[in-house]
Length: 181
Image (cartoon, rainbow, N blue to C red; front, side, top):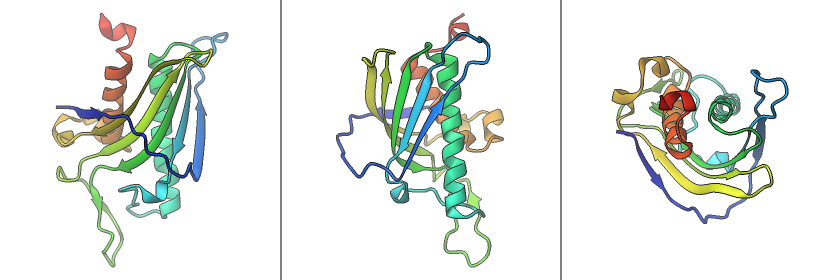
């Protein structure tokens, strides 16, 4: 089943080569201000696995980060109250599968249960006034990802990673109100 380990990470390192802020806009209400997600990718060159299958490394990293940022933004829109800020500092990323980096032919990502997705990050959920509501260090990993990922998510780009993050988000911040009924 879904596994995760919550750890406080006191590791201080060089603050990032890349920094992204994602503002989430609620389309349902013209007057509502939305929850905000701020993501920081710390030392992405040292991440365990962010190797492209066929694209350039920089383009693949940019696309991967954009996909995961959009997923966090979607979750914040769906689950967090208006005007809260979720700050996330990603310290490592290991995508599902592996890339045959030694191949002399075209590189390709192979998905195998032996190479499960992992992500390590710290988070803070802040109230509108800046007060910390919730914070922690997280290491998510999902060794059973091939058996437990929905068919819908398997068809998505980074679907294994997205479902793992979705499950953590639901566990950490609670279900949507309509999920409770």
